[in-house]
Image 1 (cartoon, rainbow, N blue to C red):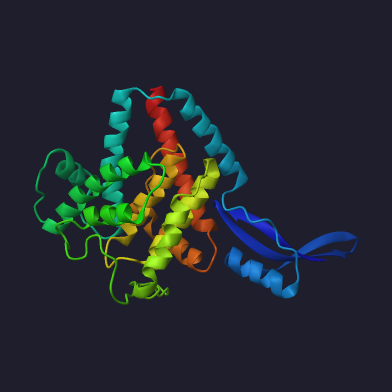
Image 2 (cartoon, rainbow, N blue to C red; image 1 turned 90 degrees about the vertical axis):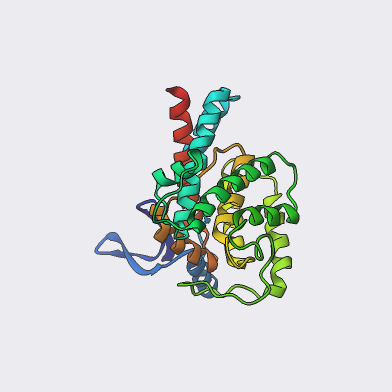
Length: 303
């Protein structure tokens, strides 16, 4: 008997092709093949007519923890104004630091705080790096307004992108790219610039799709990947993708969530997996960061 076995190692999901047979009166299992991702496994099953297991983008035990913690957070709502303001300020600084650092900004977390909260200029750091910090906070404030809307339109996404590149590359701020682009260290080749508006309509559809609890995390991951996959702008795509991801999460009641600089390598690998149709690693990474955000909110409230 040959079948697919689902295995979890270090929080990541793997799939194995296993042969089970009786040897010397005992049932013995032999691993015949290890798949690199869900997409490869599904393709193999289709070709060889093997029953494929149900794909869970978020592990059930992780999904249960998230749902229980979200329920607990909702029981404290509405949050005290002062508590909410302190949590928002913490998020603004940390999200700005990590999102910019993923893209190569050299400001440290403390320096980002000093730029945003004290208006200081940091010696040895470029004007662009300072503007990336102040622009990103402005983009977060714009994002928070968008969360309250029932529907988000294309102009609002363009306006959000314009804030990210304001005073840095004004000629590209809020405008789709008008030519081909290559992504450094990536195998993926983004679609033609002529196709960008059509592809972006799918981003909007997902962004406006109703979703609750863990399903919102799955859609947020898809929105995030699709924006990066399309690469609709010359610059600022990653920052915008992480903001749109948060719109979807926060509309579903989750606290704002940060993909951290320390996760950069795993993050890029997860995006590559998603390019091949395997959304498990990216969705799981975002789900774990959602869990961290929930834990941070609950600890702050309970203290």
